[in-house]
Length: 212
Image (tube, rainbow, N blue to C red; front, side):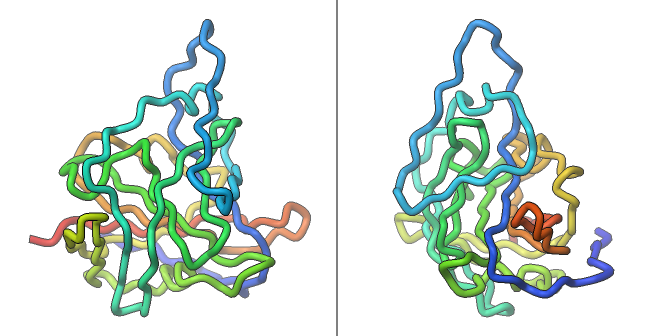
C-alpha cells in the first residue's frame, strides 16, 4: 500500500498538541450527553474535531485484556498504555505525559480480531520532554510493532502506512472503526505548530496490521 510522507517536517516545539476526536454516533435528541469520567487525574482532554456530544455516550466494547504497553524497536519506542475515554464535550482524552499512551477504551483491543485499536499520545507538552511518539513519522514500512496486554500477552503488528492528516480533514469514522479488518492505529501530532491556538495543525497516523 502506498505510504504518504510529509513534504515539510516542522520543528518540534514544547507545547500541547491536540488529538483526534472519537467517532460520532447517531444523535439522540431525547438523551442528554453523559460524559465519561477520566480514569486518572493526569489525563488532559483536548479536542480538534467537532462531533455530536452523543459520542460521549457510545457503548464501550467490553475489555477482556486491554493493551498495557506498545513498543517499536526500530524507533526506540517503548511506552506504557492506559485506558482513556471521552470528556464532557465528546472528545478523546490523552495522558498529559507524552511518555504515556492512551488506548481508546470504547473501541477494540488488540485481541478483538476486528476494527481499529487506537492508541494516542501527545508529541510534547509544556511540562514534559518531547515524547516517544514524535518518532512515529520515521517508521519504516514493515517495521514490527509489539503490543503487550495487561495479562502479558504480546501481539505483533507490521507498519503499513504513516500518513499526515490536517486535523480538519481527519475521518474519525474511519479512524475509530469498530468493524472490518483488525488494525493497530497509533496517533500523535505533527506538521506546523500554530502559535495562535497552541496546537499542531496535523495528526500523524500510523496504521499497522497483524503479523502472521
